[in-house]
Image (cartoon, rainbow, N blue to C red; front, top):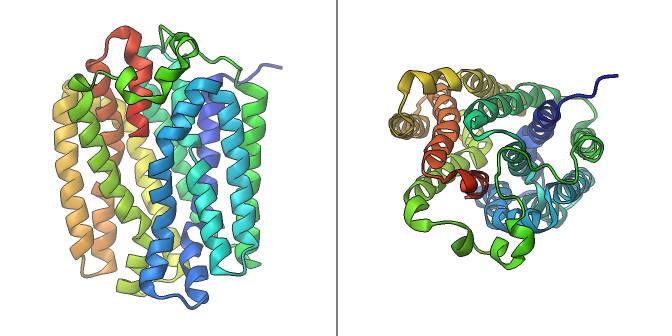
Length: 342
């Protein structure tokens, strides 16, 4: 029997990853509200995951540099599965906070999968591979929110999400090799010889070349993260949307993101200038967020979601391309990984 390619396995893991996440997204807010919390507390809890993930991402990245992608990815998928089981069994606000905190610390499988892709992919193919990975992963957001309305409630949905991460764990165990270094990185042994360097950006990155693009990526990602973290609360409060409607809206975003992901390669060829592509998509993101904030009706909000999803998908690929253009060949994989963590 022919073994699936490593790229196909990573694409499948990305799909299952976001499928599991999107299962519970429309349901977390109603569960938190059912415990009698205020809107401020509910908003803080829904934002907790993103905030902790932002802080823990560099630590997990450095950990994977020292121990290798496979063991860290195994640990992260298993810990994430446990966090969703804990979330499904929660009967108090404290348990929900603990479960979301654990997920925030360990749910870095998307970034780690991208790091594996960098390790095994020639530099000239990164844009195409990342576009396919983003598109395939986004397809999980199409299916997940619809399945989130299954009968028998929140516990069943969380258990199903945990099972998907267990499948990711098995896929990683079975198909990802101990050493995945390939053509994407020219000097894979640097970190093992100098483990202290993998713990510091100052040793790994020439900041005079990359500080501006890293800063741009941070602000663009942060703005999208803030909005998406509070999306369910915003739609519920402004338009009195039910969890089912919120789930459909999240699925719609996944559909647009997936379609855009498959077309990003053509967009890049059309531009022939990654910096200009990034600039225009950033402007589109600004207008999309402004429109979403001021949308007076649910219909206009749906319309504004289209440029939001298109711009974020293009930004992921174009910012990666800008980063690659500034790299020496031997630093490409390392810098792309660091940029993803930012």
